[in-house]
Every structure is written in structure tokens, then in C-alpha cells.
Amino acid sequence: MPTYRTTVPSSLPPERAFDYMARFEHLTEWDPSATEARALDGDPAPGARYDVTVKFGKGEQRLQYVVREIDAPRRIQLFADAGRYTSTDTITVAPDGPGSAVTYDAVIELKGLMKLLSPVIASRFRAAGDAARDGMHRALNPV
Image (cartoon, rainbow, N blue to C red; front, side):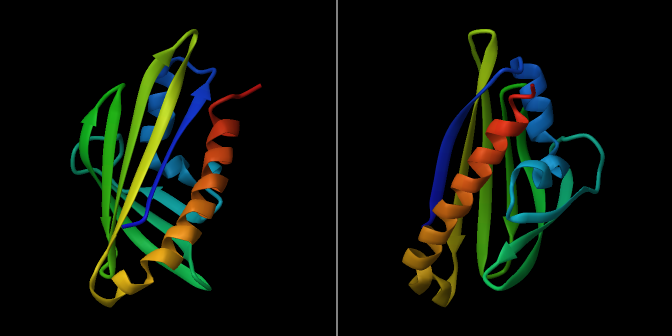
């Protein structure tokens, strides 16, 4: 099961960092693999939906993320079912000195024959995660 976990320091106070990350429509601002992200239901809340398009292989995949849990300004969990796999993304924000520490934890659960591709997908997922981590760092540390 491909997973990716990273913690990024932020100069933003926890409430601001959480508000930015919980609004998943900002995904395209920090994740280069996301080509489109749109909120369908307004503010982040349980059941809120986001249409997200990501680069997948040589093409693109459209996903609908749903907020499963939210404990503002500490934690939000989003879930998407793409048919051949599911993605569970958990964002946790904690105070860290004058700023905060933002942890992004993503888990992809492959289904059926896709499980055979787990090592290849895990490698690509790590590379995409590293690029997203760098984008998070830039977005969460404005000049």
C-alpha cells in the first residue's frame, strides 16, 4: 500500500495554516501533480466535496474528495474513491514556536490487479509527494 508522510514547518500560526490546507481548492497552489481543484460545497465540513484532477501516468484522473473528519484547527481527513484505488489524505497542524508544523499523511489503497503495481506506484507516489512537500513549504512560509 503506497503511503507518503511529511511534516513541513510553517511561519503561519496554526489557525491560518490549517485554514489554508483544509481548503482543498488550494491544492493546485502547492501540489504540482494537481492540475485542477474546486470546492463544491463551500467551507470545509464533514461531507464537503472537492473535485480534483491529478496527473496520473501519462494522463489525468478526476477524483472527488470528501471530508470525512474535521477537528479545526488541528486535523482534517479527506477521502477519494477512484475505482481502482482509494486515497485517504490526513492533514494535521500543531503549534511550533511562533508558527506551526503541518503534517500531510497520504495513503493509497490499490484494488484488484492494481495491487500488483504497488512497488511502481509507491515509487512514483514518493516522487510526487516530495514535489508537493516542497510546494507546501513555499505556500506555508510566505515572505
